[in-house]
Every structure is written in C-alpha cells, then in structure tokens.
Image (cartoon, rainbow, N blue to C red; front, side, top):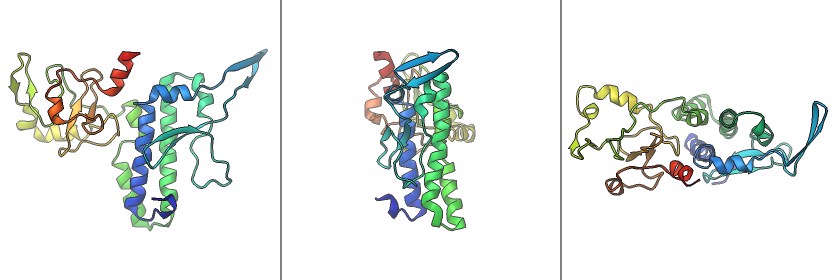
Length: 252
C-alpha cells in the first residue's frame, strides 16, 4: 500500500508497527551489521586540539521501511521531503560515546521519528481517531525500551525449564514434568500481570496467551515462536535453546 493512501487508524498503525519492527531488528538482532554500517570516518587530521574529519561517508540516517526492512542511508534530497526525516548524522556520533549509550540515543531518535511519521499520515484524522491511534502505539513498548530492556521480563525461563512455551509445563532436574504453579494456583492474577510486562526480543510485541513463546536459556529473553522459526513440536526436542542473537555471538 502506498504511503499516500494511508487513511484509516488501522492502516497508519500497521505502517507504524512495520517500521518499528524494522528499527527494533536493526538495534537488536542485526546490531553488529548496523554498527558496522555506521563507521564514522576513515581518517583524521589533527591540528593542535582541533581536528578536521575526512570521510568517504556522508551524514547517515536509520530508516525503517513498511516492509519491515531497515536501511542506513543518506537523507532524502527533496526539500521538503515526502516524509519526516530521522535523525541526521548518527554515524558521526558513534565513536564519541560508548556503544550502549549510542544505541540508546539512536533508539530515542527512532521513537521520535516513528511518532512523527505516524502523525504525518494522521494529520487528517479527527481528535478521537488521533487519540485511538496513539493508544494503539502506546500499547507497544518503545524502541528505546526494547533496546535498553527498561521493562524487565519478570517471568524468565530457568535452567530446569528448558525451552517451553509460556503455557507449557516446566521440567524438574530429573527430567520429569511438573506443573508450573504460577500458572495453575491462586497466584494466576499476579502472573498474568507479570506476563503483561513480557515483550518479544525480536519484534517487541507484548505477551499474548494465544501465541507460542520460547525463552532463550542464555540471555533469558522471550520470543514469539514464529519470530525465531520455532514450533511447539520443535521446542519439545530442544534441551537448551539459544536465540539467533546468542547463536551469532557464539560463532564470533
């Protein structure tokens, strides 16, 4: 669907969610690739305490596309641009701060950009529609929250739990199944509140009891099975599950 044809709250939210998923992936799963694409410069000429920077790269921006792909690219040449532009020159800020702080900064700017694009499309919505659009977006964790882990996952998998879904039984040390009391006894309501703070480490989507989830035994993050291409049947065959990000780090 062309961006100019976005008219309803649902269409705008779908576009927002796709762009958001792309940015989350760039700053989490694909963070090493993203970081390398933002290499700020290849040479420096120092003059006293001042220096001039020479680079074969221009000021770059991080874009999230409606097809859930991310891209590090030059800003649009049109003035004014067709859409609001993301933060300019993220590559030149990279080596002036720690990697963690830089990624957090990019995440904050990405959240600002997502909101500006969504409300650019929603300029013709009425007051109630704008309120509903913001409410739908606000139900998702921000890119910053996903990247920094500000909303902790309270119901994390343990070594004994293996790699089962949020609704499955845990396994004891001797391998025999035992029920998860937090899902079966009077603390159900408390657990339900904890699950509400659980977000997919891939797409950032919130917990839904109708979907299959799997926990990484290494980083202890939870993931939609569909996001990491793990089915319930396949999970039953896995003794220790490592998410794609942890697998990638282990190979390096």
